[in-house]
Image (cartoon, rainbow, N blue to C red):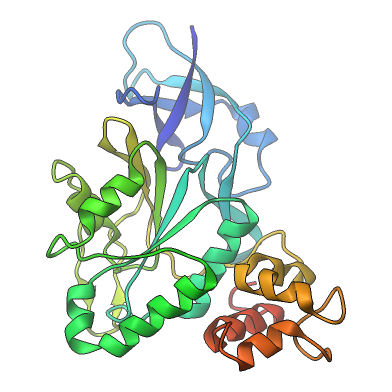
Length: 313
């Protein structure tokens, strides 16, 4: 018997599927020829993929799994180039209704170029974005100006920034509403509180929650698998391992500015088209940076991408 289901857990060579929105995960393995046919990425099947699978005789179990026979076309996906596998790419998740990018200002310290690379990738692959600034209860006391500056930069670029605290519950009800009826990817650097937010959204869940390494001010990897959680009757969240490197894939230098929404708006008034927004006279983007309509931080991220920083590209 063949059924269509969604991949809800990826443990490397073994998977769990469910016929969403029904939540009854069952074990599956990948047929060899599917693996061969989709070998351009390090993972031929990603969480969120819709697949066809053959059910075995008898009850499905990890000892008697279903067999994935086909991966259906994706409506969208997010992909990154690994820092230590520069010639290969990794599909983070597929068929997303929304990417919830969780960030913190410090502990771990916010790296704007890292965030901007994720945002550019979301724009390239047409994944709607919600930026969640977590731990705001700490920042209002310790760094209110930094907090406001971050909000101004990204709301000015055209993104929604939701301020939350998984510890106090601030913003969690609003986030739950914004995630309702959707498959949401929760992504961000290690230690920003993704797993804590998942648990706050649905207290019945118990994803691993880790502590920040004070020695390195970086998050330890507490999530080792790509896994989907059921937040509510019709809403789901994909929790990912903390990402420390995010390289751009399938994107030429000349295209990058098109995926900065504020540069796309201002760039229509450049004297020369195309314009790299670096040295050309009459560049509307450079003028917008000088006049504060585009943040210097975002512009510097763009320049860094143009330079093809070897650490990420």
